[in-house]
Image (cartoon, rainbow, N blue to C red):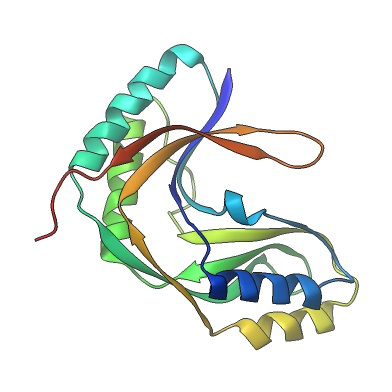
Length: 189
């Protein structure tokens, strides 16, 4: 069994890293598990624990999806949280509304649903998880930090591939291994 997910890999820019480390510094009194910069990604579909004999099927569908799409640009912007002001759970960088990304995600989710990986109950909400919140020392101070970065340009990204990742969990946090990259086949028009 392998813990798998399909995602878009993000290589953080200098500005991204600057904002990321500013947030870490501003939240130093809180207990937050920060996602390592090399692990930053946009999840398209989480498979969970998957039997190894299903990997070929997944790869085949990801190849079909990648051949249906062409490269596109994303605008990473804004900082926000999932959860409430009283019980925040996740800190994220947002993604400006993007039809190409929505179409790609729908395509991947539909193709995986057809081979038994059912759709999630929630709609696809594109984001980059940058921190998982364990404990907030001062919720008002934390809210002020998030509001300070709420409307901010983070990075422009050229998306050219889908990746199949394996997530290996350990006490020091997850490590992600690329199983395979699926480059978009359709040329830009």
